[in-house]
Image (cartoon, rainbow, N blue to C red; front, side, top):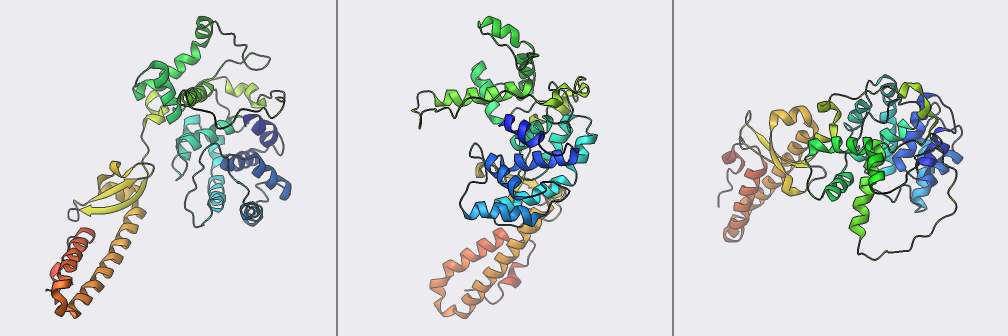
Amino acid sequence: MSQYIIAEVIEKGSQDPTELVFRILLFNTFTSINTYETLRRAITPFTWATYERADYERVLRRLYDDKVSIYTGAFQKPAPSLGFVENFMNHLVLIEVLMKNLPTRCAKAEYIADIFEWLCTFKSMGDFTAYQLVLNLSYSSVLNFSDYDFVVVGLGSRRGLQRCFKGPIPRKCEVDIIRWMQLTQNDHFSRLDLKFNGLGSKARPIMLCDIEHTLCEIDKYVRKLGTSARRNFQPSGALPKMRLPKAWTLPERLPLRIKCQKEAEVEFIEKFVVSSIESHRGAEGEREFLVYWEGYSSDDASWEPEDMLADDAPNAIREYWERVQGACYLICDYVHILTVLQTERHIFSALYMLCCRVLYHHCDHSYDMISIFDGASI
């Protein structure tokens, strides 16, 4: 896939930094050669300067209606909720949002980690997606940083490390181990009697991102050991001549620009995104909310203080109270029915008590429970 990005996405078309960012971002969003080529054939000129959402929607919707896969099948491409039913439409909006600042941020970034951290602030841009986009951008001249500057340890590479060293590894050591593997790779090739000639005419060594990817593959291969293959591998043809990014030869990439350890190892910082708020407890000023986290199971739900969530997730709080208010109105309607049907008190008493419990659980405890149920006693 990287060969296609270099030859078709980066080198074909305007080399203006903004246009480069747009094409790389567009390809990275869907990670599908067919989708990218379909868009490129159908839209002329194929540029950010002439971008109109309706043009891209028309092409993508035709693929969607024809049941042609728009996305890669290699991994999931989650889309944020930005007002549309279809993922591809939400992704188009996300591209538009990112394009407002991404070209400028790439130009002004002091560290490559700055771009990664900024991308991770967008919903649906997890570590994996953000790191892939940073790597693809780094194949071009819009991100001129050394390949020794930065690496992100994802879930697959973390498991690969654990398989290599036969046990859990402290998070704070993971990046250091990958750097050590990169720096001492010749020793290990010699020790294992393996011959590695490097990449290209200048025998480029394995870099940090290559080791991270290799660790992911190690984990995949080990997990597949002992399982029958669903289909036999069939080569699609002769491999094309390898093309290395022209940007790798730029002198701006020679200096090392590594953030201080605490900042550079951004993968050590767990990134939690609120999925929903499902309950609350305590009075105003000391209130806590039961938070369910995106990408985590219900077992990981936790009680969090209101003041923290008010800063980090105000919309989640607002949506929760709207749901609670709606539930309160619904339950009050039930109570009214019970009042009218008091002659059936034996039948409805159990339901009435259940309504009381649900209302007390979901509504603000400061509500006047007596006034809510006035006249509804059974």
